[in-house]
Picture 1: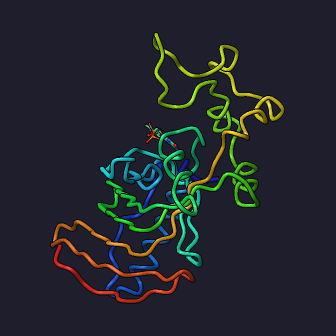
Picture 2: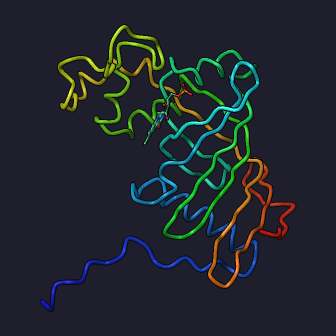
Length: 219
Ligand SMILES: Cc1cc2nc3c(=O)[nH]c(=O)nc-3n(C[C@H](O)[C@H](O)[C@H](O)COP(=O)(O)O)c2cc1C
């Protein structure tokens, strides 16, 4: 055995590729990292939608899955939340969205535009529930709808789950509140901030993930 390894940085320096084709690949690689690496800035994007009045609304969510072949990213939510209830009232439970990802270490921003569908049942929901951790499932045991008005400060967790992760059996009760937000991506705008100059490009995805209308933009 040699010397103990020095602490490795959690990432390598990001070097933007010279072609848009390769940048598309880089974008999806970083999205994949954002799913699994809690320290990656892409793990906690800003999901922007329109509210019932057609006004912009935004909130932080956790990136749960990124599938290049389907040009899709997945998030999870409580079916009783405002954004979920709004989508439930739209045709196909679908509305427009923008998701903004920024990783400060890589100085990389993705602005993702697409359509957002709420899934409350089916294989996608079952698979995402099965893949979720027990501590994540605990959120769905909340007795009240997120955003509901309370007479006093309220953690919205049953008393016995405060500071405790539920067992699989205990967590099961939350499954009815669990929903998947699936964004089918139409367009990505990628911006890298570099010491030698910034760099920006955009492209469109079709529903098979194929890229078209790629072009360079002034940062
Ligand atoms: C770090 C962090 C992670 C979050 N992750 C999620 C999430 O994955 N899904 C979600 O619905 N809300 C998540 N939230 C809460 C939302 O930001 C928001 O407060 C909540 O979903 C209510 O939003 P709405 O009223 O627009 O439905 C997270 C908040 C923070 C600060």
